[in-house]
Image: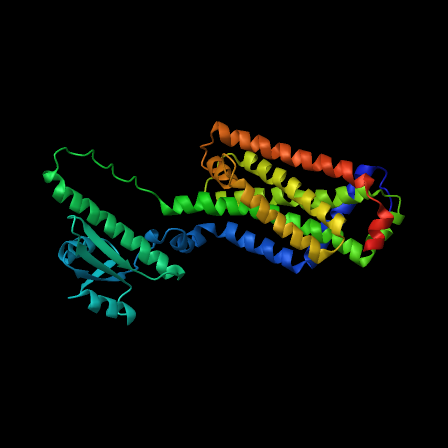
Length: 360
C-alpha cells in the first residue's frame, strides 16, 4: 500500500477500505437496513408502536372490569362514561375475585367505605406484559374521574372551598412518540453502531494479522487508526442526516437538523475513540466488545445525572424548543468529541506496535 503522497491520502485510503468491507459485516448491514426501514416507513410504524409507548392512544381496545363493593354503583356509572372500559357488576368481592382468576374479566375494582368516611378502592390487575400496561392506563383514567366525581359530591360539606384542579392539557401520543422516541433512536443508534464497528475493525486487523502488513508499509499506526476512526465516526452523522431527510419526506418535520447532525457526529467521535482505545488495549474482539458494551451502559447511567438528558436535548432540538441548557449541552458534546479525538492522537503514537502485534 502506498502513502498516496501524503498522510491525509493514507488516512482516506484506509477509510475507503473500511467502508468497502462493511458489506461483508452482516450484523452491521442488518442494523443499517432496520434503521432505513424505520426512517423510511416512520409514518406507518408510529401508528402501531404508539400503542406500546402510550396505550391510551390505542383505539378499539376494550378492557372488561369487574366492580363490586358498597360504592359500586357510582363507580360503574363513571366507568360507563370512559372509552375502552366495560364495567361488569358483581354481587360480592369474592365473586369478582373468582371472575378474575377464571379470566372472565381483565381487572377488578372492589370498593369499601372506610371508618373515617373515605372510600377505598382495591385494584386487581395483571402485573406483566403489554396487556398490563393497557389495563393499568384504562383503570387510572377511570379512577381519576371517579375521584373528581366524589370530590365534587362532597365539596358542599367543606368549610372552605378548595382551589379547582385545572384540566389536564390534551396531548398527542403520535407527536410525543415521534419526537421523544423515534428521532432520538435514529440519531443515537448510528453512534452506538459506529463504536461497535470501530472495535471490530481494529481487533480483526490484529487477529487476522493484517495490521502487521499495514505496519510494514510506509504508514504509521496513527494513520491507520485515524483512517478507521474517520470511517466509523463519519458514518454516524451521514446516517443521521439521511434518516432526517426520510422523516421529512414522510411528513415528520424536524427542526435544527444541523445541530442534531453535529450532536451525532460529536458523540460518534467520543464513542468510536473509546472503542478503538479498548480494542488496542485488549487486542481481543470479545473482550473489547464486552468492555465497550459495559462502557456504553455506564455512560448511559451517568447521563441521568446531567441537567438535561441527551434524549431531552435531541427532542427539544427536533421540536424547535431548545433552551440555554440545551445549547450548552450541544456545545458540551462537541467538546467531548474533540477531546476524545485529541486523546487518540496523543496516545496512539506511544503504543508499542511490536507488543501489540505480539499480544494478538
